[in-house]
Image 1 (cartoon, rainbow, N blue to C red):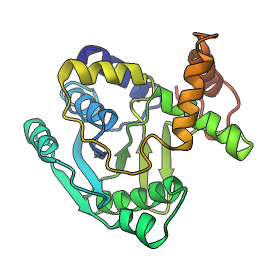
Image 2 (tube, helix red, strand yellow):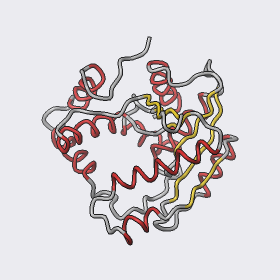
Image 3 (spheres, rainbow, N blue to C red):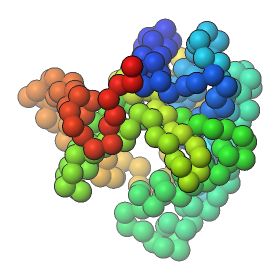
Length: 241
């Protein structure tokens, strides 16, 4: 996928759900994976011509699970003139050594978000951008249906009143295949995920299930995304006018 297409799809999401206002200071959560790096590229390039002016910073929450080479991300941020902060934590130690969690993903996400939110406030940000893409929306809805007995997906725009922060998801209309194509074309310096649960989660199970179901119905993802964005699903707003 070319940069122009990534920018077009990102702007479509920003405009559809009015995610950005003049004067926003947006923290981009950078895990080191392909999705967050693609988001960093998109928002960095868009701010050059987007009609509403905004500033960016990048934040990585280091879980303390092992050595992550973040130097290439530092180089990218320097090239984009984006301040970059790394938050050292012992989240990995808490989850795997102290609590010995067998299903740590939910607690890990909560702890990571807490650390990210606090740093974003410290840096003067009023919004945080997550790199959830179209496939994440679909998978979250099915995970909710299968494991919680409800049809729910995270919202494109969420206000966290306790933190006085807003969460936006600008890659909403970008597929995972698009991100992979962008990663390959622009040689994104993806950091290997050091988490021992990587590839062995409920989300991975749902991802694999969707892949199997698509063999009989190639339009399955389109149908599921349409159901989320146009149906009466918990958590999902109507497009703003």
